Amino acid sequence: MERESFKSRLGFLLVSAGCAVGIGNVWRFPYVVGQNGGGLFVLLYLVMLVVLGLPVLSMELAVGRASRKGAVLACKALEKPKSKWHIHGWFAILGCYLLMMYYTTVSGWMLNYFVKFAAGTFSSGMSADACGKVFSDMLANPMEMGVWMAVTVIAGVLICSVGVRKGLERVSKVMMSALFVLILVLAIHSFTLSGAKEGVSFYLVPNIDNVKSVGLGKVIAAAMNQAFFTLSLGIGAIAIFGSYIDRSRSLTGEAVCVTVLDTCVALLSGFIIFPACFAFGVNPDSGPNLIFITLPNIFNSMAGGRIWGSIFFLCMLFAAASTIIAVFENIISFAMDLTGCSRGKAVAVNLVVIILLSLPCVFGFNLLSGFQPLGAGSTILDLEDFIVSNNLLPLGSLVYLLFCTSRYGWGWKNFRKEANAGTGIKFPKWSRIYVSYILPLIVLFIFVQGYWSKFFG
Image 1: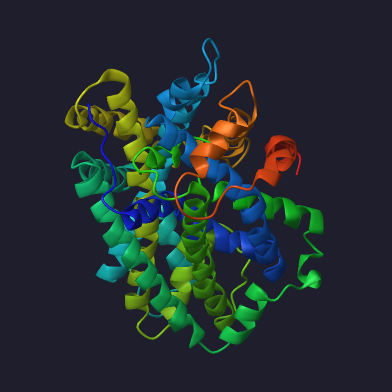
Image 2: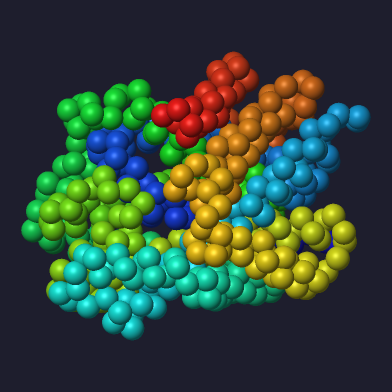
């Protein structure tokens, strides 16, 4: 079966950036910035993106392009005879399924809130308690959550069913372009609010006093975690798109472009939220509730808040959906590579499978709320996210690092030959010691630190 390919470089960049861009950029990033003192965290995050994210992203793309395979068969196509690197592929696809088991639920929240704002559920003068009740009522209703989850799954697989060029690439171009425009409009609007200057200052100006209560060590660790996880590295979610591109451009340059696009969305989301928080006297470190409880209160206080709230959650929906269709493509490609079945059959089977697998996360907030796997107050979503974010992503990235640098894997020379094929920025030869020895230790630190903060922090 002939492998599909992207029609244009822009298509590849927007699809790959769409995979990296997600609720981690527009939901998690702002509240993590708020919890870690603002400007200093942002500066550290940008540094960590370069020293941590770019090398692993380049390696994932190189493995994908050289093998022309998805996550499960990529290492098998490149590894030495009788070696076992390909076992990682099964954990990678497990990570993709696990990610979809809760990502579809949260994406359903975004779609639901977009509809609620557009329909006028949130109105001017609505109390903070009333805004919070909308969210708690949604979580308590398994039917409401299940329907919106199913809608996001059906939409995602239908897009992928059309193919790489007509479905994934075409829709991602429109959706990502719209996301950049809408998020820019919202950011400009936030700059016009009274008190916006203080919010921008908190966000961009490094201030050691702001991080004293948190601790500089914790802020550095948080910046490393955010930089590492924002690019969706380690589970082959990016590698698949390397398998769809030609060798006309070097992969380090493409990795830089994807990282810049991903970072722009994260930074712009902060420009939306922090000026608004300071303008309306809201504490910027209010955590995950910032999006679903705090921001609706802010929008209700704004002139034209219904419109701005609708646009904001449409942005959130686009960000979440871009990741969903990208990871769906991984899952569908896996089924096609492994069984030789048609795209239509792979789509049909996985449509049912993903909806069924997503139900425990939906029920974890209501019917199964008594099951608290990580301690009091935790949910099934927390467990699924912990397995992916704290285990499969860092350990999977470690495998890519070792596979591309070790003589027992694909090897340094083979990796650099593939990464540097074509025009553009080259992967530097002098970086071998860093990516072979130092970066794996940093990844192991992130892995251990994730457990420490979860159970002892």
